Amino acid sequence: MVTSTQQRDITLRGLTERDLDSVVALDQANIGRARHVYHHKRLKAALDQPALHVQFACEHGGKLVGFVMARQLFGQFGRAEPALRLEAMGVASGEQGQGIGSALMSKLEAEARRLGVAEIRTTGSWRDHRILQFFDRAGFELDKVLVVDCPVRGDRLAAHEGDKVLAPGHLTGFSTSEIDYSPSKGNDFEALARDRVDLRTLKPEDTVHVKRIDESVTGRRREGYIEHVVQEALTDSAVRLSLVARVDGIAAGFIMARTDFGDFGRPEPVAVLDTIGVDPDYSHHGVGHALLSQLFINLAGLQVERVETMVSRENFGLLGFLYKLDFAPSQRLAFVKRVS
Picture (cartoon, rainbow, N blue to C red):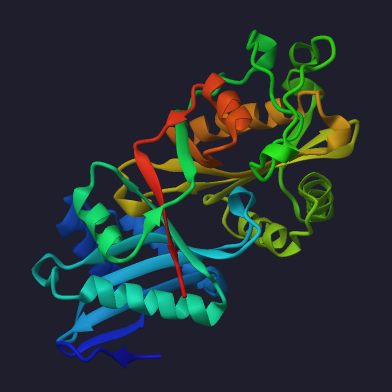
C-alpha cells in the first residue's frame, strides 16, 4: 500500500525490483563503494520469499530518496519470540536530516505491529557515530546480548590435528541450561575426527530429524523456524549454509548458518551462526566439534573471512567455549527496539 507523510509530500511504498539501480546508487553515494552484488542478492531473496522480508522505499518528487530492508526472525539465536531484523537502511545525502529516516522507521514499526512482532533488532559498529545517533533518536536500546566473531580458518577445529578444546555436548539456542560443558569420557574428541562423522549438506528428508533434535535440546517445538531455514537452504545455497551430521547412519546433529554479503554497510562477507544442535544421546562424541570444523572449511572455500554469532551476556559457559576457539567481542553492538 502506498502512503504519503504530512511533511514534504514524501511517499512510502514497497521496494521493488525496479528500484535496484537507485538503491545501489544511493548506497554508493553514502558509503563510497558500489554494492550491486549485495543488493541484488538481498532483493532476490526477498522476491523468492516475500513473506519473510519487509522492505520499503521512500520517494520525494518521483525520486527514490531512502530505503529500509528488514527480515523476520523466527528462532535464530535460540529466541522463542519472532522479531524483525533491520539489515540495511539508507537516505540520500541531500535529503538527510529531513525526517526520511524517521518516516521509514515508523513504516517499519507499523508493519511489525501488523505482523504481531514486538521487537526490531539490529547491530551497528561502535565507530559509526552517525548510525548510533540515529538508533538513539529512533528509540533503540542496547540489547542484552554480545556479538562475538572470529576470523575463518579451515583447520581451526580439526580435532584430529591436535586441537585440545572440548566442544559442548549440545550447543543450541545459546541458552545456559541446555549446554553441557562437563568433560568428555576418555579422549573422544581426539579419537573422533571428521571421518567418523558423516557430514553433508541439509536435504529435504533431513527436516524431520532436525525438528526432533531441536526439540530434544530446547524443549520447544520450533517447526516454523526449522521449516523456514530448511526452505531457505534449499532455495538459495549461496545464502544459507546448513549441515547435518550422521553417526552410524543416524542423524545426530545439525548446524544452521548464513552468509551476509554486506548488511549494515559491512565491507566484507560474514557468516552468521544461527543455531547448532546435537542430539543429547550423542553428546561427548565430538559431533558439534565436527559440525563447526566443517562449517569453517566450507566458509573458507567461499572466501568468507569472519563468522559471528550472538550470545547472552550471562551465558559465561558458552562465551568461554567460543573464546577458546578465538572468538572475541565484535566491534559491533546489538540493539533492540520494542514495538508498542
